[in-house]
Image (cartoon, rainbow, N blue to C red; front, side, top):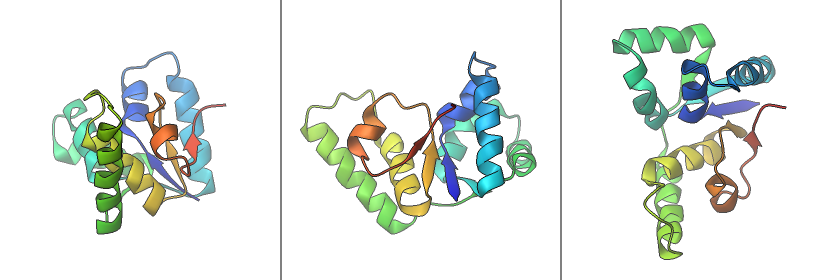
Length: 133
């Protein structure tokens, strides 16, 4: 089982939000069932939490998270889904990086650990979303 991890989960843990412990347990359980991965978009989004690239890479290694770049199929699908989102009047609240992360998870993993604000389930109905509990 491959679990892609969204930056929303990392920020929840980094900021010690109320659900941080639940997310930590969820990621630990997912890592016991298989691999944890992130794409370059997530890596870029969490980069501000670190003083250096090496510190970020060290943290990912300690967590057992593998870097898995987007392939062309996932990137193209993200653009198509984003086009549909904007065509339906979707506001600029969600930008192409959100759709790149969703497409990466759909095409290159089995599920996505993410704080879903509704757009993932709507625009990626076949994507399994992993949440605590």
